[in-house]
Image (cartoon, rainbow, N blue to C red; front, side, top):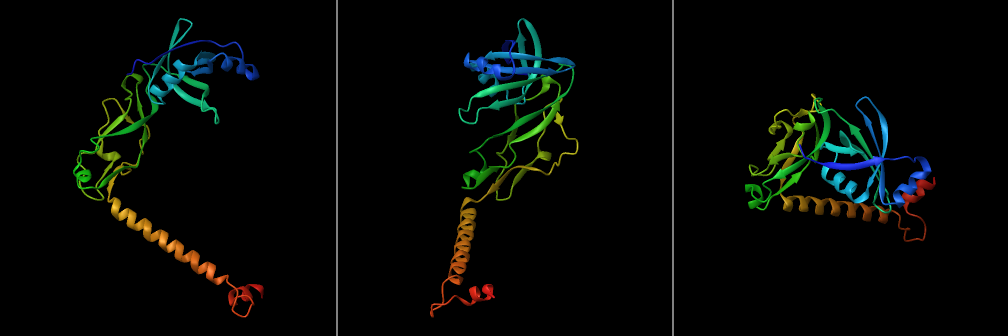
Length: 229
């Protein structure tokens, strides 16, 4: 488990007054869950942003509240759509002895080393994240998937092909193990398909425009006349 820490202090203001917290360079937040009353918090902006980037929604965080320590996970982060700055963060308190569900990122390893890529083919990552369940200490920072075995077009790796770390299971017991994580494709073939589709669309647009051109006698086209009737 990553040793991620964040110091926060109790927040005494709420509602519209929270704006004063942000102006002071702090991030308003809240900690809830684990049979506890919600606790309003505030924390240094830079420290909070760094923690959120490192922890994501998948790594446990040790939060120190005026000397008191709690284990939690980032539950939600609100971002200002214009300034792209964190304006609020929610933490969900958890217990070290209880299994929790988290969204783990999937990292492809061995990119550039596969037979497929050496043959000028490309590897596409189809699935970026997967929900897993484990005790906080067993939660992986990421699920690593080795792609060096991919060699030809349509080779693929599915959820059923990966081995989860000890103590970790898929959060959904009914997860479709045939779900594709990564596959191989030929960029030249895909480019040709795209070019053909664009040509077909252009031809269809040209045909549509031709139907709207007035007849040689200054009247409307037959199709336009039919619509008028």
